[in-house]
Image (tube, rainbow, N blue to C red; front, side):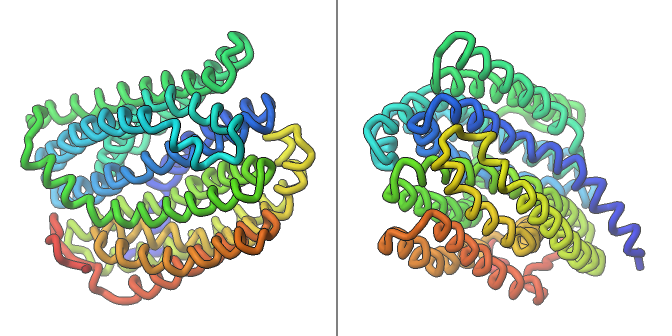
Length: 443
C-alpha cells in the first residue's frame, strides 16, 4: 500500500505543470478583458456577449481534450503506445473537421447571436466585430484541445505548458499593438488572439504527429476511428451543453439587467474562469491518473488517488477563496474604469470567493469520473443540475434583483453539481478496469 506522500507525488507531478498550462487560457481572456475594458463599457459588454458564444462553441468541444486524455491514458497505462498515439491523431482529424465547420457557422450567425446576447445595439456591434474575427481561431482552439488531451494521457504536461506560455505572451503583445498601437479597437484584440492560438495549435499538433510516426502509428485520417471518437464523445458533449447552458442563461439575465451588469458579468466570469482553470489542475491529475490506474487494473490505487485528490481539492478551493476575498476590493479596477461596474463587482466577487471550497471538490470529482470514462452518468447528472439551476437564475431576472444575486444562484449550481458527483464516487460502478471501457457502462 502506497503512503500518502507517494500518492501526493503522483498527483503533483501532473497537477503542477497542468496548473500553469491551464491558467494560460483564462489569462488570455483576462488580458483581453483588461485591454478592451479600458476602451469603454460598451466595448466590454460586446466582449462579454462574444465571449459567451466563443466559450460555448469551444466548451461544447471539450470532449476532444477529455475524451482523448481518458482513452490515451488507458492504453498508455496498459503499455500500448502505438494504439494510444493512433487514437490521438484521430482526435486531431476530428478537431480539424469540427473546427472548420464551426468557424463558418459562427461567422455566419455572428449578427443574430450578438443581438440576442447584447444589452444595446452599440454593444451588439462590438460583439459582432469580435466574433467575425475570432471565428478564424476556432479550428486552432479545437486542435489545441485534442493535442493537449493526448499529451496529458501520455503524462507529457511540459510541452503544452511551454506552448501556451509562449502563446499567452504573444497574445498580450499583439493585443496591445493592434488595439492601442494600430487603433483597431476590439477587432485588434480578436486578431491578436487568433494569431496566438494558431501558433500554439501548430506547435502542439506537430509534436503529436512526430511522436505517432516514431512508434509507427497511423497519421492519415481513419474514418472508423474518427467516427468512433465522435460517438464516444457524445455523453461528454451533453454534459458540457448543460454547463454552457447555465452560463448562457446567466449572460441573458445580466443583459436584461442592463449594460453595467453585463459588463460586470464579463469581468466576474473571466475571474471565475481563471479560478476554475487553476482549481482544475487537480482535476486534470484526476483524469490522467484515473485512466492510467484503471487501465493498469489497479482499483485500490484509483480509490486512494481519488480520496487524496478530494482533500487537495478542498485545500486549493479554500486558498483560492481567501485570495479572491482579499483582492475583491481592488480587482475590479484592473478591468474597468467605470465606477458603476467596479461597485457592482465587489459583493459578487465575495460571493464567488465563498463558493470556491465547494468548487474545488466538484472539479476534482468531475475529473476523476471523466478519466474513468463515466460520461453517460455525467450527462444525466448535468441535465439534473441544469434543471435545478435554471429556476434560480431566471428568478433573478424576473425579480429584477441586483447583480450579486446572479452569483448567489451560481452557488446553487455548484452545490447541485457537488451532490450528484459525490453520490456517484461513493460507489464502484464507475471503476471499470482494463484498457478500454464499453459504451454502456456507467449509464
